[in-house]
Amino acid sequence: MKFSVERQDKYAVVTLIDTSFSDELTPLLKAEFISLNADGFCNIILDMTTVATCADAQDLSSLLVADRLCKKANGLFVVCCVQQEIMNLMEISALDRSMTIVAKFDEATDLIFMAEIEKEIMGSFDEENE
View 1 (cartoon, rainbow, N blue to C red):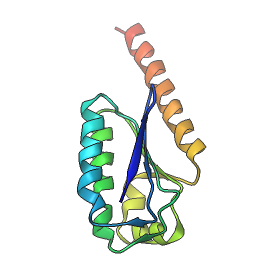
View 2 (spheres, rainbow, N blue to C red):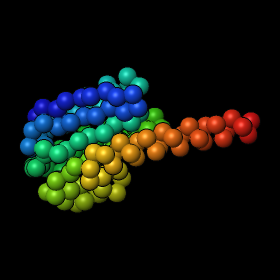
View 3 (cartoon, rainbow, N blue to C red):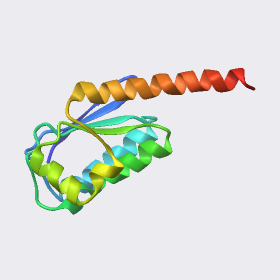
């Protein structure tokens, strides 16, 4: 499976290119998420627009890695554009309860910008109270 990475100012976008989420992808995605986090990206969007099938819910474990890394860095991991078959697997494995999943890419970027604004506001509020 192939994917592309686009780095923006406040977030990185990982876009999956193939139609199937396979066990070959899991270690590659984990490595990419770790690399992005090490490069200072605490906000990551995973665009799954093209992915229609997944053989095993275990293959989705790489998403948990990204979610944990982003949360630990006080950021946000957002999965967007999930097809129904993949969403069913996410629901069965309870991934939908632990991660942020939205229907559209624009919603993902909006969530990240809102979270960043909130951090800035809370940071300035904390500075005023010191």
